[in-house]
Image (cartoon, rainbow over all chains, first blue to last red; front, side):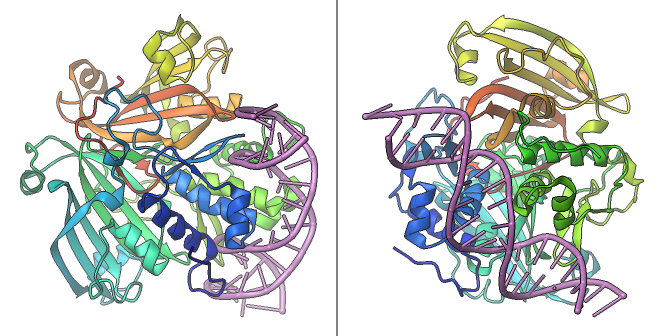
Length: 252
Length: 252
DNA sequence: GAGTGGTCTAGACCACGAG
DNA sequence: TCGTGGTCTAGACCACTCG
């Protein structure tokens, strides 16, 4: 059992999050099985209950765990407890970690004015770019574009990358958290080349997901994913917000 | 200044949430202005800092507030701090509360098997149905369908309803919370009649938002909204989850 | 240096579920 | 009755921002 390092660079609740994610990914805790109780996690990892709850709040918000008052906390299945007509096997549920990624493009550039503003920095700052095609069982399902301040994740392009969405890599390895207020989706018509890569009819609907991440409150990372419709459950935070009338809003 | 009732039916952090929402809606705190500090809110409302943070966590997750470490917590603008080319006036930003609603259909029915399962109850239970067209400045922007156990919100159809999304009404008046793991979006092609109501070309992309709510961990409410694309910022919780191959997934 | 949000502790009482 | 998650308290120390 991995331990939590109180003097580590990452806060305890993020260390515990990674530990729990790894346990779930390893298959030790299949969908539907109970996670150890909050008080048990306190004892095991030597942290207070509020810290454990902070971690569980994150994972519940991400849709990976579900709480049932009086009973316990359980690993969610992809269909989030809804009736499943076909009742497919649970491990067909693929979290991000079940995806494969093929690199389309990567490199480091000096930020232009627009990109610098997006990342909350000044022009000329070094920025890592990374574009990947996401595959599920060899079938393309999404296109991911990432832009990250080189200073925030110096070894991002050099080191081997786990088969995870970019946002997850940045959280686990560099402590970059993705502010829910900065993660939005929209519905768009897939354009020619992108539709082709995803094997869709041009003009058919797709989900465009935008996320921006920060460390210690300071921005520095943005990731977009163009998702094939009906292939993903995308969980939303809360009320939709109206935009002003004519949005110039396709940073893509 | 409204006070918090420690013996009220709603927990303190939800009471404080309603208070802060009303202050923001009233215009006392325009977009960009600072909210009182966490410690100041503690003093003002006689609650501990963890309780204040619980409330602020909610509102930040809903995209209404933004924190800046070392500086304070601020009312968010619709464009969440992104560069706004047109720089429209901030009060054009419309949260849910800026929307108007026109009732399309309402009534109470006995749940069939399928609806009962959706709401986590048995067949024959009384269920309120409510369909509304959402308008922004008189222009249709979304269609909302709600299904709620009558026992959960007995007076929902009888009482006058504030101009808020159904989920917000249920939270404020009945303490129904919407589990983020049960709120999902998808991109769909708008079909004929719905597209017509929303003034869209048939087949153009739209966002389908599904949310399910519970009280004390017991389900009992579901709301869907079909949103015009590019008219809303929909905030997402975290990683998208892959669906099994062929989803039978249009509860609409 | 004073104020802010970010993290963390070590308790407490409650309602609920199960045996 | 006992264990669970839900709520809440009254503190603490840190890094950061600003004057």
